[in-house]
View (cartoon, rainbow, N blue to C red):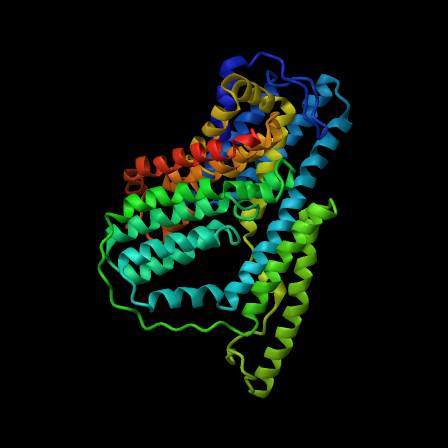
Length: 472
């Protein structure tokens, strides 16, 4: 929907104008935006994305319509190239370029998801949750703790996992306190999205910007204070309306399984490896992540041997493993990756790449970045991120590749990440919590606090423009 809106802006401003020259990846300099197959491709993408938006109603996995749309769009593009007399190698080179970008993203995320699934299986997140709900904190302290933990965990784990973990804490402590649950969930969504904005690993959009080379690993941390303000300002205002009531502490104790701490350390070393591949060897970070997966692979073999021995001889050897448990298997963790999400990325990247070849993104870039200017265009990207998902629009911006200094690339990274907090449907974290806290955290409950969230959004932009002015 967001890309559709951007395309409408471009088409209304000059659908008959010739597109600018391509930005690489085999893109032709000829504008095909006024062709019938071009319009058909645009309509197919919009229809596919409408099905994505209504996934909760139709129960059709979001990957299916965009994969179908991607295939049809590239068929129409190839036919258009032939009609226009463009060499077929152009379409081949363009789709190879998009497939390469997707492969890097896929491998990177697959390793990260495997580590997260492994830590979940080793009870890392469950142990953290049980520790919080058994401490006897007041509701206001729980409000601040869950928001703060969402902010500091999401830079490493994805914002969806972080939001679900903190949401489980809130639901366990608050029980039937609907007002507190709604406020705490809003706070968690803001914290998770803000925390992910200043780390290359915190959100898919930051990962894409880093892998594209628009900002170095260390430069993302210039966004720490803007991201912190984005969370702290709304949290401080909302906390005034949170009761200091102390609910009854829950007697819940969960122990981490054998190897949990070492898996966390290996995940850290995997991140270090990926950064080193990119910074020192000029190799794709995904290759470093795959090397890091081998760390987990060898350690999982050690865990498997230990747990098999415990099951066979009924000698626990100091590890937590019941006779009903299966021994740890890394390939089961790979299988549990969010394949619907990973395949959705494939569809989005190929759809946007195909529309780019038709010349639509060149029109969007001209209307937004040349017409509005980079700063206002990047702020608009963040506002649009509140409507649906920020991944397609960020990939569109990266495909447009407007000439911007690193400060502007960091600005669009910030706005695309935190803009999703303006509405409950603007991020995976918000959508997930609406499901788990159904009836308590709703679209309307979040909308009441949107003006307060917008204060944090505006403050984070101003803070970035002020403290990082040297980057512009």
